[in-house]
Length: 346
Image 1 (cartoon, rainbow, N blue to C red):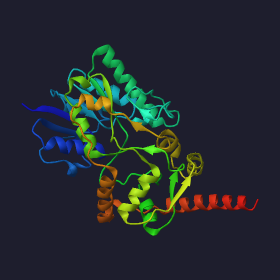
Image 2: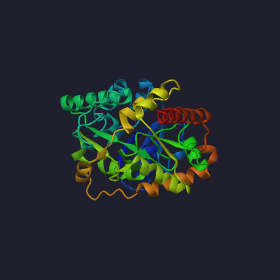
Image 3: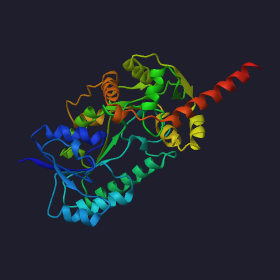
Image 4: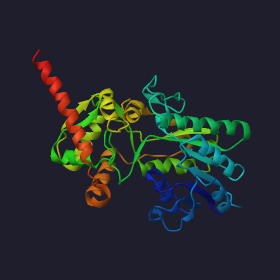
């Protein structure tokens, strides 16, 4: 008999790869609960429940009499949402998997090497503090009431629909890619030497699936990332290589980007100071011990080529111009170039 899993969400960058991986096997009966806005991405054979999780009563009615071996929460961002899940699924699942975030780890950490035991604290990003609060609640109900939680902390996970970057505007990565193609300078936070980890969503799915129904995962937290760490200069150079162009890098301090971005509505304080400006290397020993034989096979130079090819071949979906961000980049660069020129006159 197949085991039964419910995904809350199920059509995002991470969850799509997991649902697809499970649908291709014979071990799991897959159910997805969401508002139905992206039903077209679900593989054949996946059961879909159309519901809005914010309407707890309606969701409870649709799930009446149903139990699951595993429930996976991908869209829980606030404590009230995981409290709701506890009411809905306590006693109705053998495992509740909560997607937290590696940005919850202390910024800056005492060590660049991150394990699941690294302290959780992020004074720069409310998103991360909310994830920490969700983790705290779930571990409390695990300790006090035996709620079978497993916490997952992804870092920067991407798929063919997204070219991952450090600094971009509100419309995603395309405007930066366009600047690369035009030979214009591209802003990289800091001096480009800090280390970062990019994880292909298919690789992430392997680790996640290995933790599903795994008794050793109950009451535990796991980070799931690639073992490959690159500097931001290497990341941008790899993207430029995939585009077949020369990178024109322009380094700007994260503090300056935060100040310059505030007036434009860019949350670089959270995204940079609270995450991407800090060197991190993830130690996945705990995950590999719990999921024997796990291998992350897609290196960044391979994965980003998938993403670049998809982006260039799907202009309507991926190529969203952002003239406001383009102008902002030019202004930041002009201001700094002027300041540098003033100092050369001294």
